[in-house]
Image (tube, rainbow, N blue to C red; front, side, top):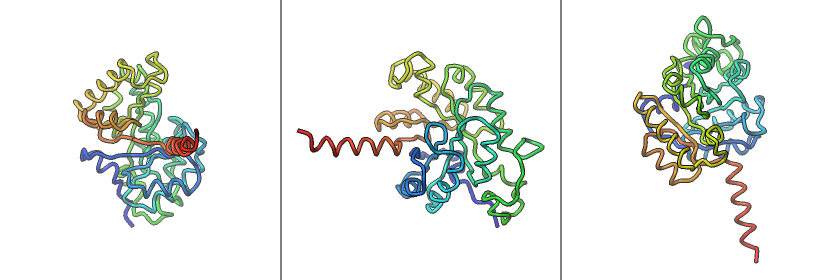
Length: 255
């Protein structure tokens, strides 16, 4: 049996635009629904949600019913133990939060790779190996693994090229919310200085040929970033969609 192809990684390096949605609601049903909603990718978020590492497995199984949709996972931190568990569950693409230096990027790369190139622990009877059925998994796993590092601070922007060009980093994701706080404008993702920093980061990454992604929940803003070169963009969050829909239906009956 061959290791499943990472279609997200393949499209990423082909420069294809990919629209994504954030999954912050745990359980089976919501990831399954999002997987079939027509997005190119769904990110299971373990950093800013109540989704724990153990919840990643059923989410991957639910999204996996829709092979045209890629599943990404954001671990709670740049932690090799978390990586090991999530990768063994069969995740092929990790989005690692709060990377500020090339050294931190290299640590994430090491946690993604088996020895001697890295420090990922080896286990044979895992979903990643399809329970021992994938041919030569340990030698070929890295071919289909994809590492996206998230830049969300001034320090990260200062080290952007060094981080992005770290061997083993496939792409960079800009985090507007934490970046706004780091720049002294917490919560003001559209502040002119924050927006200028984001646009400059996209330009710098495009110039060196590194795929760049971002979260932009306002459609016009998302389109503007795509026009500037962002190739994978998260345009919605499940919990926000639910809150907005609930508010609208309630407002309909006010007055």
